[in-house]
Image (cartoon, rainbow, N blue to C red; front, side, top):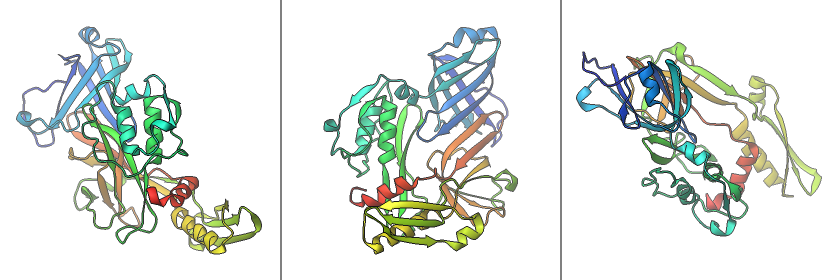
Length: 366
């Protein structure tokens, strides 16, 4: 659906598609999906024999879109990708993926510890992303987390496998007066426009950070029934036994009875390298504090908003929820029709107990 003249309404969506630089006016529908740490994808249905002459596996697709003003087309989410899947029929479709897919299909490289120890994880990942025309010019910040020999980064990996391994380690432990105790902040990556790679660190638990938007009935930007909650209790802990790994008779047991009343008993057992009961107790309380409630994510439909992107913070204040919450956008889908509708998933992926303990035990480099 190319940009065409006609009546202009504030909520009307205009978009254009080109394939290998040639206008593609044969689309009947399209959707753009985006998520952290993975490729964006553009799914397009089309009609006509002429469309088949343009669509080919490996072709480069560009999609620009905006709403309300033909003379000032907003393309902050401009998509550039490669056709990877094709149904070559008169009523056909294709799926194109952005250039993160090139990282996933790259040759395997041998990543050696001696080449990386002491380097900032951020810049090591950035170098791996410098491939097949991906623009890494924005990757200048650094994370302050440095590579050590015990990190699981080395050996034969594709570029994306190495980048993912770096980001698995790029977690920050925060203890200050603006965050809850032992807050974990997680770096993420995505191509959010064109071929430009972004690394970003959300800070949703910061008490002084303001969200990009508040979704509420009063603001008329969401319908209460459109909130879908996903509750993950697989890593919930409300009863913990921590035992010294050198003496099984030296242990502590702690219960969170409030959590048990709500969710039932979820017990966990941990052997920890200390004989000090105070240390065992401290670890037990930290684990209960972090894992005594399930991980909750939300899926919401937002109307008339085209400025939001991955990593932006959203506050949800709705009667269906026990209290307002602020979470980052981790996925979204935009249906390219006459109206702009954006379905977002917000929340945090669940953190494992071992990941949490690893971060607690290495606070100086984080």
